[in-house]
Amino acid sequence: MSLSPLFVARSFADLPGWNDDDHLAAFAAFRRSAFHVLTKPYRTGALGVDFNAFAEAYAEARTVSPANRSPFLNRKEARAFFERHFIPAHIRAENGGAGLVTGFYEPEVEASPVRTDRFSVPLLSRPGDLVDIDDGNRPPGVDSYLAFARQTPEGPVEYPDRGDIERGALDRKGLEIAWLADKVDVFFIHVQGAARLNMTDGRLRRVTYAAKSGQRFTGPGKILSEIGEIPLEKVTMQSIRAWFKAHPDRIDEILWRNRSYIFFREADVEDAALGPIAAAKVPLTPGRSIAVDRLLHTFGTPFHIDAPSLTAFDGKPFQRLMIAQDTGSAITGPARGDLFAGSGDAAGEIAGVVRNAADFHALVPRALVSGAER
Image 1 (cartoon, rainbow, N blue to C red):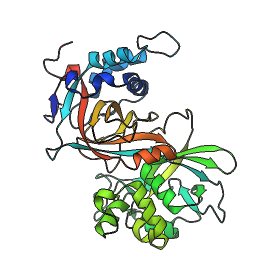
Image 2: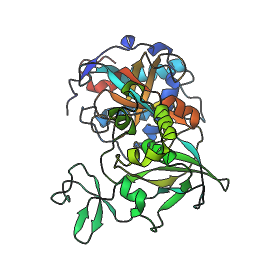
Image 3: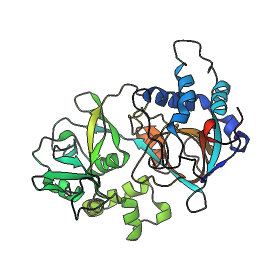
Image 4: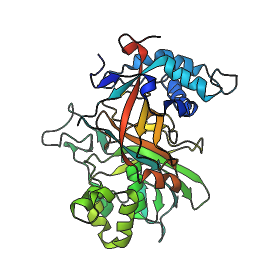
């Protein structure tokens, strides 16, 4: 597979803010992927960044251990690592303009292990009758978008959607992992795909994505904009939450128009400084992990993101090296990314306002770039 013409080779001198970045933080995230691929390689994306071309960089990254004096004692040496193994390539956006970044985070909420008058909205585990489907086992008439379905004696059929489930379609099946107090909190946990739960019994638990009902996602921001409730340019997580707080009688009306429903599984909180284990099977690193279109890109690829209008992370224009370690159904296209802001309310305040134009530069293994010098 050849490298896509959407990639245009550049030099590191072309990357705004490259010399001022904390490459050591990006290296730590990259190193986690370097160890994971020993268990299971990443799939090469359709744009042709061959996973096998990362072998040399991954091998060197694995030689660094916190227990010895590594060659990466400072940011300068970490920067040299990326410059030694990669060539930056600007990614042309499909529309010919700039790319787009948004933000995501891991909510942290109070929850109960049992249903109470206050805690009455469940997070559900994957049902036993939910099956994966593809073109090989998709019955005639079933939406070609669906990747999940309900198994019946007659074959797979479309699974109940959000409205059906919240009206009781899966009641009394023992799927409840935990109970929350606020339906809107639960919805945004569905959107983010993970959460930390501060349990009323004193435990800290984490849930992360396990499966979904299969229908298309329709964001409430888009709906509220289309019906004239919030101008599109003012749609943020914060403005959506404010609207729901002001219109509690219309929450179901809006949320049920998003037919997709998410199921979860429990996961350990091994390092409180890191996020959940995501699609690339490594813990997400706040401010250094990015979700990309996994059909186009290869997990583990470093991306230098230049978003001058984005200052929510640290008050400065966003110019950072990120590592592709997650994906999402709304993240489609070659120059489209979702920046992981971290866990808890402060991270949510950052992630909720991120919607900025950005230039994407993939760091492509040198072996894939014709004429690249060592």
